[in-house]
Image 1 (cartoon, rainbow, N blue to C red):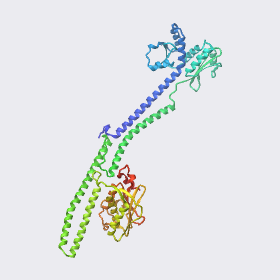
Image 2 (image 1 turned 90 degrees about the vertical axis):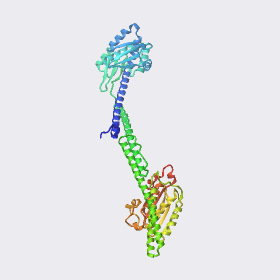
Image 3 (image 1 turned 45 degrees about the horizontal axis):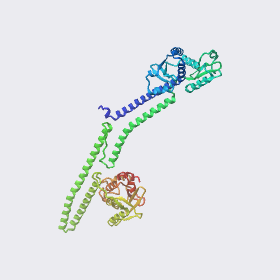
Length: 547
């Protein structure tokens, strides 16, 4: 069956990850282009700052009627077109005007060429130079213009102009009384003849420009670096940023899917803990959405089946009371009508069987009531309960019924717990009655307070419970085939009822071997009051099982 993008979790995640990859690649490419463009503009500004200042000052020094001729001459010398524009006749933004008013060059791109604009000092004119690329002719022409500007003035004026140039020149500029080093003899002779020499430094890819300035001064410009591709360190930083963006995008995509799965897991855990009214919020029609709807349907079906089962158990148990009462009434009438010892003994046996059946009905009703879900279950009337006093009451009640056994409550401190005293005493009584059926001669009941729980232990000296069967005995109507057989009595519901009572109290019941008497030790574990603060009781059942 073909699924649309909105119906398939895999396709949605795949599409989102693919979109994240495309966006990351696009951002990386855009970032590379932006960084490269910024580096190119910075490189061109470094090259143009000094020469444009010299050209602007030379243009400002020319008489107005000779400027056109000077521009034509300099254009021929530099090999680039040069023009003057009135500043008010050029369309410029606020930031461009501010840049020009600060005496900085403005670089604009026009197809394959670049325009460099510079304002003339103290004049409303802009000098425009169009450059297609850095050539030796342009280097020679710019150096010639610089030499012209520094020549024909006094030493003080030359020093002042040189200091002004060095402040704005982004390339090293030096005037020295000694000839430049590193030039070959041919270049040295050309320098002596007044020519401008351009020297390439082998292995470094940088240029130096040298020229003679007067009789005893030498002008050196450089090193002039060539434009290089983006450094590997900068590329790695850019790549790292893009990977972080990609990792963050993938994290949020996967975290959304994981969050929905976690909600399913929490709902399943709550249902496993007996909260069958738990439902999952369905947010879409994809795979996880359909899984949530199936999960909700399953939970509703299980809840309905359990409710139907409990209602049937209650109905059957109540209906059994009527025929049991009739049979008991009939047995009583027959017993009153006969004096035969044999018949009366048989009738007494029948009455005992009816009493057991009546007790079984009570046990079934109790188990059904305790097994109800939170919407229809019992309401615990919790109060501060003295566990040791309760243990004495249980022993005092059961001891006369088992004269062959020695039942005792071990000494210890008084321990109070927040619980429903009626149900808690029922649970302890079931454990003691269970021990009475299997003990050989001794039963010990102890009450202790531990770090996380209050513990009530019931120990006997019987055969104990095999380790493999310690979970089975808490199932309804479960019987073991060893020493704890049917001849010991009971209906297989007592321990199930104990487990339900402890679950409703937020506690648990565990069984292990008694180190003191050698038989079984059943332990009721109840959370202390400080553990229950701010958290529902039912969440502590599994935790206390590890105590």
